[in-house]
Length: 227
Image 1 (cartoon, rainbow, N blue to C red):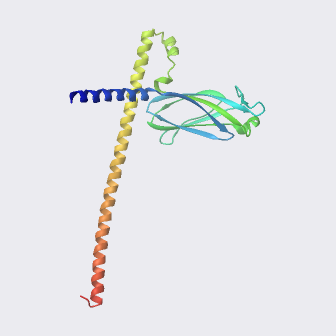
Image 2 (cartoon, one colour):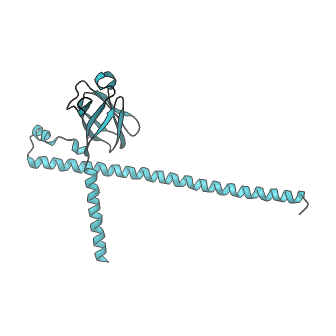
């Protein structure tokens, strides 16, 4: 039994480390295609007081050569970010290649939307655009070589700074998970309470219906002089 307990404890530790590793991984890159006037949105789950940096690059489709051009000068991208309450955190027009930054103040799902100013560019009208997007969250958004050069940090000091930032980000992730757990608990309690009241209402309705039916049958039998 003791061996089984140790194995379970080790499994729980490995699972916890895996969860922390996944939570700490806050950078990912992708690319997608959009058409004229098309808007593409992404949902990013972000803890509160967390910095987010997004880097993007656009490539326009050349219909004659049937390839994506390496650059698209003159084409702009509009970036809009909304917090979980629907409040606009960022709304700005950028160039064909750029970087946007914002800090979350409310934990939860943030909506990040991008669309091009294709209506202002006749060359792109009716065409296709490839957008490379890289979103970095938390300590992944920090440029540590730049920080080391600015603050004149040694390699050991820089590593300690990275570890402190990772611990802080993990703490934020844990706080956010506790926030989600609390919201889920409140939702569950509210649902259970509604189910309870609905069951009570159904029971009362059934009892009243039974009483009404009995009185109706009694009146019917009395009218027929069967009782």
